[in-house]
Length: 138
Image (tube, rainbow, N blue to C red):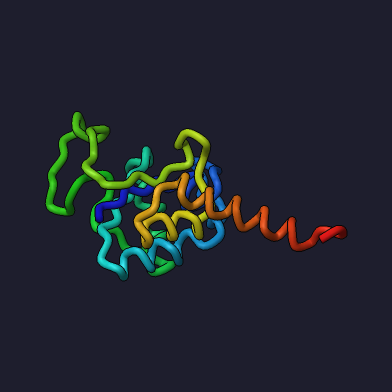
């Protein structure tokens, strides 16, 4: 599966142009997905030196991307192409409608091939069961 991942607000806290703190489990989850042969593409508005800093930040944590801001490593882009459409099966981005779920939910959705509504429906049922068990009257 090809997975496009944003950087600011998704892998790290949104502190652009600085690099924020890592969001909990972001890097470890992405490394697990890469180990499972998913192709990870870093898809970010960062360019030039800011992009190099983000790629190096990830690399120092053992996270390598299949490609950065393009569909495949060999692709050559001119300046007009830098914001072109990318071909990915999944986009992980903090600007999704409803925001970004935590990385545990993201991993579960990808590894179990589930949609967000399935994951959240199961979480809601489990939470209801917990509340029932803690009741004073039952």
